[in-house]
Length: 387
Ligand SMILES: Cc1cc2nc3c(=O)[nH]c(=O)nc-3n(C[C@H](O)[C@H](O)[C@H](O)COP(=O)(O)OP(=O)(O)OC[C@H]3O[C@@H](n4cnc5c(N)ncnc54)[C@H](O)[C@@H]3O)c2cc1C
Image: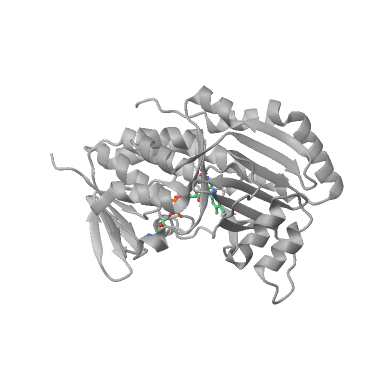
């Protein structure tokens, strides 16, 4: 029997991971990525790979590579905007329990590792514009007029997926979550972010996170709710200095050292979870299937988990049946995470002083015993059992 041909649309973290998993499962895979140049496809900065993402990458045989490019995070420290402690969660203890650490990685580095593994099966400069399916296969259409025929198609083309649009042409656009992230990555000796620490500072309708990356770098993002005004002509740096100016160190230092090199704003979107996202020989994966806000830091982790499960259930003799089996295994878990992530995002948007004081008091009282425990119950409830 010849190998079934699977076309993966989108060479982001999810699409590349899917290619590795499907190849291991006996498919002949091509990844079609719209960006013509590797750098354009690797835009973005830091990323936290939680225990579940690390376990999933391990299943793809990438343990050594991830160890090499990752920086271990041992604590997640929460404080309020005056610098008063709210919670201090030991990721190191959880790493021992789950036999996998939490890593911060540079997103371009993770892309590099994945795309090197995919090698010649990654084709760049292919922007998918639509699909046509019949009983025997799927034809994928590209912007420059090229067409590729495949036995199955995986749409891993992100939040504004063209594959999803072909399957669900009347779906409204993604919904704005009500906040926008300004990110920076800098190399700054004496940056003041404690070693191996993910530091989150919560204020009123805005918050700031930072963590070290490998090679003396620091990732940060300052997140502003949609109610913040910026006078015309105000630079990003000036806006962030105004909004986070009186916040505890190292926040003002990081913003000042980054200056206008802060990335342009990333508006945060998600979509209401779907009950189904596969149709016959076409499925979706990662943000194309279940875009979630970044509040749980699970978007990339879920894309990698999707890939592992797709590889586990893939039967070369029955591509369409395999896609349905994959979807059945992933819909509930990703929907739960997307809902929780959105709910956490809502908490961070609160701006009324009384509500914020109550939220912070609740965090102090229950965070370790309740909030984080519940989050772990959710994020670590992975079903790796073979079908
Ligand atoms: C500020 C921020 C911080 C985040 N932090 C974390 C974190 O710490 N941990 C975590 O797990 N997640 C995090 N996420 C979420 C994570 O970035 C995404 O969930 C993840 O990148 C999704 O991967 P993907 O491969 O599904 O989609 P994408 O990364 O969007 O990749 C899609 C790929 O498809 C390509 N493409 C798009 N359209 C087409 C087309 N028509 N034809 C061909 N190719 C196409 C794109 O060029 C891209 O390469 C964060 C997100 C944001 C915005």
